[in-house]
Length: 114
Ligand code: DGP
Image (cartoon, rainbow, N blue to C red; front, side, top):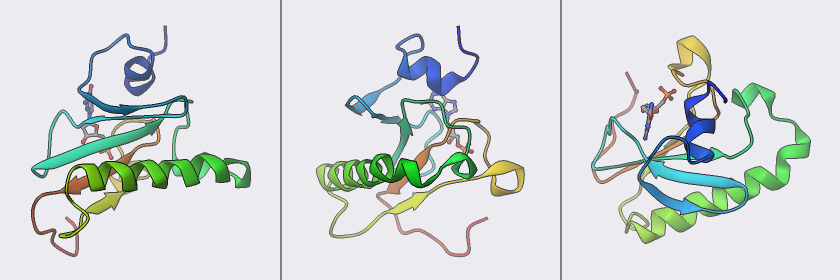
């Protein structure tokens, strides 16, 4: 059994509030939401961080952003906007070692981030 929580969610071993699933990616609600809408998109394949990606992942990344767009539209975020975040490594604030894309919306985002 994988020790990676997001692999376990992708395998159906741990429950999550899933909003989109296909053969390549899964989108589910963040357990500690930082905005009224806070979703996480993960590749089903285990990729630890953005640093592991190569040009061979181009098709996967196109799919990732197509799904983010689709979900953002479904959640009614296309007019007001939303934020997409990838935290990488310790100083980047990454706490789960499986690449994930945060989709945050439903409030006005601040800059710079904390
Ligand atoms: P990051 O800090 O960028 O690694 O974000 C990890 C996010 O994952 C964080 O916002 C909380 C969320 N998270 C951690 N464990 C779980 C879990 O078991 N289920 C869900 N749905 N989200 C989780």
